[in-house]
Amino acid sequence: MAALVVLLVLSEVVSIVAERQILRARAEERVDGDLTREVEELRRLVSEGVDPNTGAPFGGDVQRIFDVVLQRNVPSEREAVFTYLGTRPYRSSVGNPDDRTLETELRALGGVQAPRRGEVQTSRTLVRYVAVPVSVGGERRGAMVVTADLGAERAEVDDALRTTGAVTLAVLVFAIALAWVIAGRVLAPLRHLTETARSITETDLTRRLDVHGDDEIAELTRTFNAMLDRLEVAFASQRAFVSDAGHELRTPITIIRGHLELLGDDPQERRETIELVSDELDRMTRFVEDLLTLAKAERSDFLRLEDVDLDILTEELMAKASALAPRDWQLEGVGAGTLRADRQRLTQALMSLAHNAVQHTAEGTRIGLGSELSDGRARLWVSDDGPGIAPADQERIFDRFARAAAHRPDGTGLGLAIVRAIAEAHGGRVALRSAPGRGSTFTLDLPTEPPEELDAP
Image 1 (cartoon, rainbow, N blue to C red):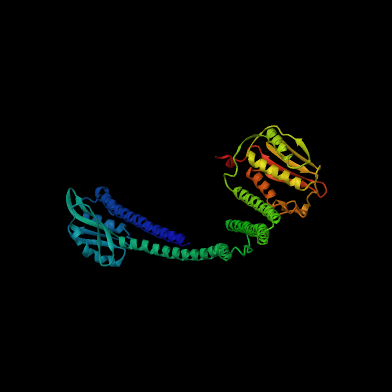
Image 2: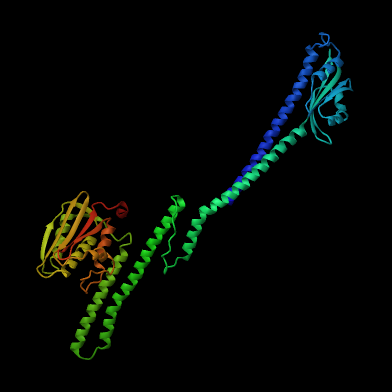
């Protein structure tokens, strides 16, 4: 606002100064034009004029010429004409009675031998003049001096500019005041935005701004509210993660500490305690590795992309999965084609789904694995005839540490979160089709060509 005000004031000052120079120049041109016309009229009378009383040429009668000139000339308020016979003042014609004092100040011009232009600063004003000698037959007989009040012309210009400047200043002040009020109303949401941003802490992300209108400020407000929504979810997720991770690690640590504190001298008891401690340490190791995998999923080097033959990958996955447990393993489809992906990460995701299916099915239960490729997308899935997943749990189970209502207690709650992270890292997604009592099907839906930023070295 201050910058705009300074710019407006400077532009007005420059405009008034430039306008003053232009108007003064035009006033001087007009004065010079009037003086030149008076001189030209005198010259015409001298060279080819006739006496209006007799109709005969003036001849050498300079006095009569001056009488006709003064008779025809009706000077304006700012003009005056002075004539001289020889060097002696003859008659004059003035528009302003005060100009009669010029006769004394211009007396020296009565003896000019050649045309002369100039200015005289009097006690009252600045006068511009033209003095021309009058010659007949090559002999100088007199002179005429025509004057114009240049100071009055300039004063009129300055007075007009003062009026214009006062009006402009008043309008400018009013415009600045109005702009200040409008700017205050426009910037009020920004001040509210600043106050809200200062009041937000990691323990209180519930405040939101009211949105009014469709302008840039309203769009900024909506963007800020959306950012707060994301921050609130992120902080809530972080708190839940810390709480859940602490709980998951605290349980095996408590178990290990309790058994070590009660460890006796009996060799059998020692072996059982060591086995139990080793099992808990293995669970902690798996948990930490899962956390590291999720942390790496947000890094640019999480994937190592290569061209993968989908049919070969599917057969390898079927061979590895069938060795997990005695189930009725079925190959439900093999897609033919190539996709660009990280073979190891896809294997990790599909084996995690297969292991999850094994945990939720009994021996001899069907577990299917398959793939297909169409319309530029590759799909790999694992299906089972297990108990299925309730609709209320189908979105939640992909969150970290989330488990379905009928979960098995030996998991970390990170497997499906890792599967989703791998799918999203490839630019795809993981889908679930399930119903209680009808089994579940987890599908990785991936583009055969991931986005360019994923494929960059």
